[in-house]
Length: 397
Image 1: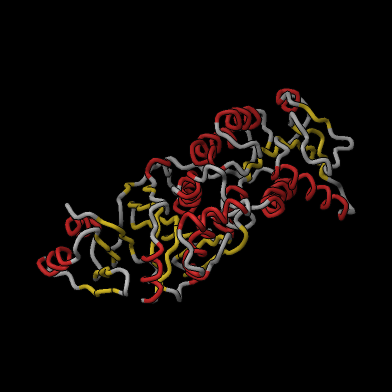
Image 2: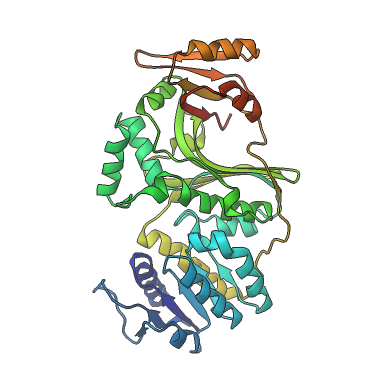
C-alpha cells in the first residue's frame, strides 16, 4: 500500500482527493493510502477527510512515512523548496505546477535521479490531455522535430467567440471571465505567459535539451482585432494562439504567438476552451492530442494517472538535459499577413521593390496583404519603419 500526501486542497487538490477515493472504492487489491493533507482551510464541505491528518505543517508530512507527495499548491518558491526537500529524501513527487517546473524541472530531475525518486507532471501541460507520458514513452522511437499546440483554454475561448460570433475582444474576454475561464486579472493567459511555460516544458521533453523560459518569444492576443479575424476567415484562415517549437539539427525556434492556420488544419477546428497538441515525429509523422485543458476532475485525471504509474513502476528515471541548444527567432520561412496603420501603398511599393510576390486581401472594412514565403529577417526588413496594425505568420501549410 502506497502512502501519499496531498499538498493543497483547492479546486485541483479536492478533485484529486475525490478521484483517488473513487479509484480506491473500485479496487479489490491494495489501496492508495492518503495519510495527510496540507491545508489551512477546508472550503469544500463535501470532501471526505475521514482518517486523514489535516495539517498546515509541511515538515510534519515530510517527516512521516509517506512515499509520495502530490503538490497542487501553486506558486513557485515554496513548492520548489518542498519538492526539493521531498526528493532529497527519496519521496516521489507528482505535480501540476507548470510555473515552477518551467524554471526548475531540470534541477529537480537531477536531484530525483540521485535519490531514486520519480517526478510525475502529466497535469502540468494540457490539463486532462495525456501528453507527457506519450512524449516520454509512446513516441520515444521518434526524432521529434515539431511541437505546436493550443495550450491555453482562455485565449482559445476568446478567439473562437471573436471568429464564430463576431464578438469584439473585450466582449469575448468578459464572457470568458463570467464563465470562470479567465481570471479577474487575465494577463497570464491573454499575454501568452501560461502557454510559454507549457511549450517550454513540452519542448524540453520532445527535443531533450534545456529550454530556458526566457528563450520563449511571447506575444499574446490583447491586440487582436476582430476585423483581421474576419478578413482571414473570408480567405480560408483561422487565428489561433499557438505555442510552437521546431528543431533543425542543433537549432531551435520556440515561441507563443497568434498565427493564421488554414481552416482545414486540425488545430484550426479546436474550439472554445479545448486544448490540443500537434506533434511531428520522423517515424510516426503527424499526431494530435485533443481534450480538456483545465478543470478540477480533468486535471485530477492526469494527476492520479501519475500516482498510479509510480505506484506500479516506482522509479523509472527522470529526463535530465545537460546541453542547451542554439536558439533563433524562426528556423523556417513563412508567409505573412500584414496590415498597416497608414496607407497600404507604401507596403505594396516596398514589396515590389524587394521582388516579393503577394496577394491583396480586402473587404469593405480593411485591406491587408499576404506575402509569399519569406524569411524572418526579410520580414523585418520589409516592415522596418512601418507602423504595423497587425501581422501574423501563416502556420500549418
